[in-house]
Amino acid sequence: MMQTIADAAHAERSAPTRVLMLPPAYSGPEDFVRAGFVGAVRQRHLEVDLVFARLELQHVTDRSGLARLHQELILPARAQGCSIWLGGISLGGYAALCCAERYPQQIDGLCLFAPYLGSHIVTGEIARAEGLHAWRPGEIAEDDEERRIWGFIQTHDSRALPIHLGLGREDRFAARHRLMASALAPGSVDIVPGGHDWPTWYRLWENFLDARFGSASHG
Image (cartoon, rainbow, N blue to C red; front, side, top):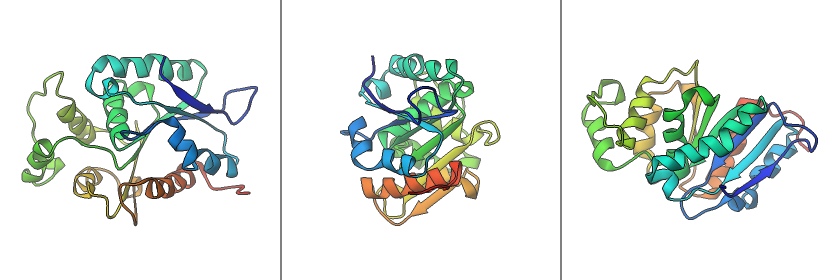
């Protein structure tokens, strides 16, 4: 089973919404807790259950890892009637995108902070095409995850699957993030001062909670 840390809004029942977050490389579920992600939700008294999962390399490089994420964490939440926001930071954001591309009907929203978006080979291809709207990848191979997620971003319908993209203005991967941002509605993109680090991601998390679930009842 995947290693997780869960924090429920109520001990006796599932909340109507579950947010499942995947960490950046070299981090684990405990880092979300340490960074204050749980506290930010509970201070707002939101009807949201949280699950933070450990992201192993196989979840990114091996499609069986995506199937495991789907089987162990997403399907059980669906069976409980939860609305599911799948999210991730950096490499975790990449895995979340890969999972959403594979199982779009099982997810109700994507929350991505500074997502890894593939190599400079693919992003350079898109930039040379003068943006994602003009990029024509042709037939994409089944195992070409990078082009598959960019194809997903290019063709996604925000009415069917909302995407919330958060990034730090000084993030070292900001140019790639802006390529993705150009394909999303302006209200779906949150840019704050900061780099590729937990303080920036925490600020983005607070903004996400307030934008998507409301900021009532701090304290």
